[in-house]
Image (cartoon, rainbow, N blue to C red):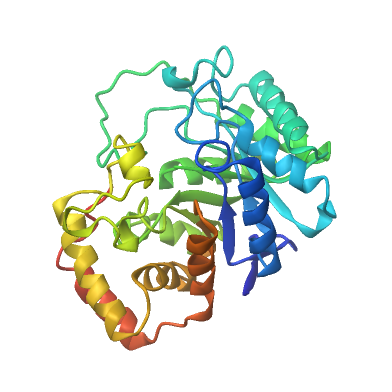
Length: 345
């Protein structure tokens, strides 16, 4: 395994982070523990979850992911692992979670206490805002709609103060953002600097060979402000495994089970995926290994969040850390991307 640090901290994290959103939906508790055991045996020390998991979110399964991690974590030495979770942003679909979804002080405190209880721990190493509580382009929305009405009133100062209090209380060690824009990240950083409060350390956004939108401006924020990317969906919901090529739709696959998650599944993405598969074959790598190795090597990526529904998939995904792509290969990847830039928002 390779390691880096959460920016501006002394916390060492594996370059590969175990994503867990299938625990409690596609994976049983036993299977979740098997994945956790295998990943940590390979040197993974970073585990990412969220209060709304598993995905797809629904009232009857909400919180199971954290519960499954908690029953595993209580058998481990807690300090050996870096555990991250998220507080849910406002969305009518998730109103079963609590009243007044958003990032008020009351809600953040309530959500954190519930996550700590399910995870059976006294603290989180990283606590993230799952998506903005204002209108922004996230979850597949390509362009910002400035004409859209919103009830949001600027509360970022209050949010940062609340998170700073939680750091001082020892409930969280650091905080991060998720599904954020460059404007949102800079606003958080400015509030922290102006009022000498805890600083945002990471942003968890989608990033893959099919979606390199992070590079347009957020990568510069990462570079100049030292805010690391926690890359999610590095295989584009499995599209970059190649299993959906040529009209294939394997039984038990996520797109077969949940066709609503189709943002990476389109003719443009398939065109690029075939090109990347040709390159992977030239390099004697699987398409998944090539796709993940690319993300692993990006200089602004702190950790690459991989997930799997089987140990076989997990083994292949973690093995990507053993590949170092040459400058020639990286140039070939850039040349392929130019044929159809960012087909999946």
